[in-house]
Amino acid sequence: MEQGVSNPGVISLAAGLVDQDSLPVDEVAQACARLMAHPALARELLQYGATPGYAPLRDLLARRLAEMDGLAPGENDLCGDRVLIGAGSQQLLYLVGEVLLDPGDVVLADAPTYFVYMGALESMDARIVPVDADDDGLVPESLEVRLDEIQRRGELDRVKFIYVVSYFNNPTGMTLSADRRKQVVEIAKRWSRASRIHVVEDAAYRELSYFGDPPPSMLRFDPDASTVLYAGTFSKPFAPGVRTGYLVAPRDLVGALVRQKGHHDFGSANLTQGLVLEVLESGAYDRHLARLRTIYGEKLRLTLNTLQDALSPLDPQVEWTRPTGGLYVWVRTPAGVSTGMDGPFFRDCLDEGVLYVPGEFCYPPGVEGAPTNFLRLSFGLADARRCREGLNRFCRVLARCAGAS
Ligand SMILES: Cc1ncc(COP(=O)(O)O)c(C=O)c1O
Image (cartoon, rainbow, N blue to C red; front, side, top):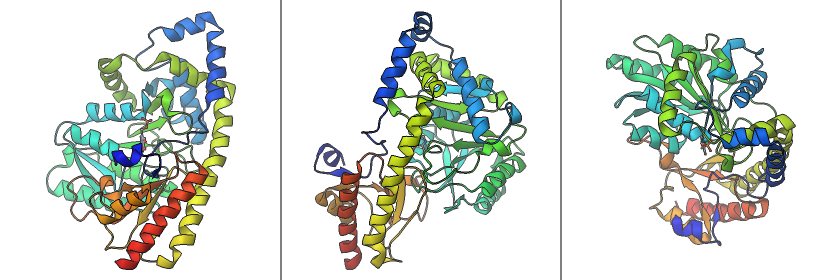
């Protein structure tokens, strides 16, 4: 894999990185210049900040989220003092695990799911229990079945949260439907008997929607604001290099999360928080996002069209998702074509000069019967020309292997 990544002849449809050419260089240069033109503000931002984050940014994020969710200001207690800023949403998701989990505790997660976070949870000795998902995201009935099984084992008190990548999931690209959002929150509340079961909504790709607005977040369905933790990020819709993400948490968890954050770093970079606030307030962020949506929307269309043209003769042996946002498409290969890194299909793709993420990484470890014939393609990093070329290479290999299987 490393060889593949360092070889410029290899096109990576594996990396979850964002589009290189559209990174907001001018927007950031101008915002920095504006900030540094005000010495008092510049000095404030160059000083240590507050551990939970820069207060004006926390307030603005609460207002923006409320608007996106169709909530009145302050409705469902969506206020700035429930917002924490972190070094990317990854840090905040990690903190959530640290605060909520003891070794051996259970996290329910839609499968397949974001493999990096599974690694973090594993490092805390959490047990990850997979919940079925389909084109509308996590299946509520499957969630109830899993909870019932856990209760029968007498372990309900070990279930601490349900982790859901709720918009344009990494890796499948699918979004949790509005009806199911409500059901998932209700199920979490109803099963909060021995101890509270939270819902951790990872909304990393929410703003990367290319064909219309996705449903409101699960914060909308949590009127007493006790259940849902919502993680957002500026990595995907702006620039990962600013390393700025945010978390909305129930009020009674904020203190513990802030204390834990203090142990890590006593606050994320004040300067980049000031920068993010500046691009939000000036409108540069929204203008950039509109441009990104066009660029990614075209790359998504190109990806789906290329797959359709090349792979439809292999239908139904080969299937793939048709997302309307995010960075990923999830492909099912024929049962005989294993996508693992040790298999011939992965090696053939590498020989042809294209990389993907084997699907087996996206299932919790130790899951019996986890399928071996899925993979993730990303159209994020490569420009349109390389994306098309990479997909053509991939489809050639797949057609060859599917014919032989
Ligand atoms: C689903 C999901 N959540 C969270 C993250 C973390 O992103 P960041 O720490 O850059 O905000 C990623 C990054 O790829 C992701 O795919």
